[in-house]
Length: 163
Image 1 (tube, rainbow, N blue to C red):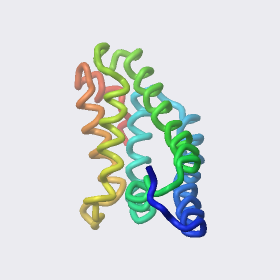
Image 2 (image 1 turned 90 degrees about the vertical axis):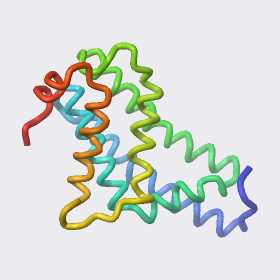
Image 3 (image 1 turned 45 degrees about the vertical axis):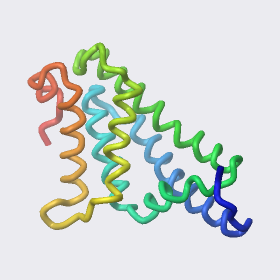
Image 4 (image 1 turned 30 degrees about the vertical axis):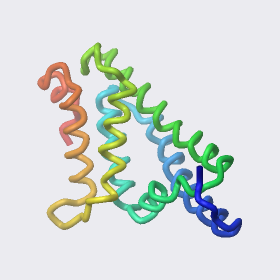
């Protein structure tokens, strides 16, 4: 059950969390229309999502640390929109699996949770520097996720863009 917040405090928190999600939802709509193979789309999604989390680290921290303080009604509304990301990634993983780039026996829901866990936790430890920019960290995270699921590294490497 959520913490007992005043109506004004909860309304403000809800707006902050809503803003975090609205930014991601608009990006999700853009990512959903990207062109390329499913493995390329997965790579781009992970990289872009990681960059967004890093660039919005403070708002993401509030999202994860204070989400449980919302009333049930508001928490359910935020969770419903947040779940659209789970569905998006699971469907994208299914397409990658159908391409034959990840193992057939991979539980896509577990893979989705693992990838989101890896990406979402970045707000806790990431401090970008000149030698590790958000783009470089995003690329590393995408490589870790994709290679961890790959049936054959050469298949994955040949499917990924060279840029």
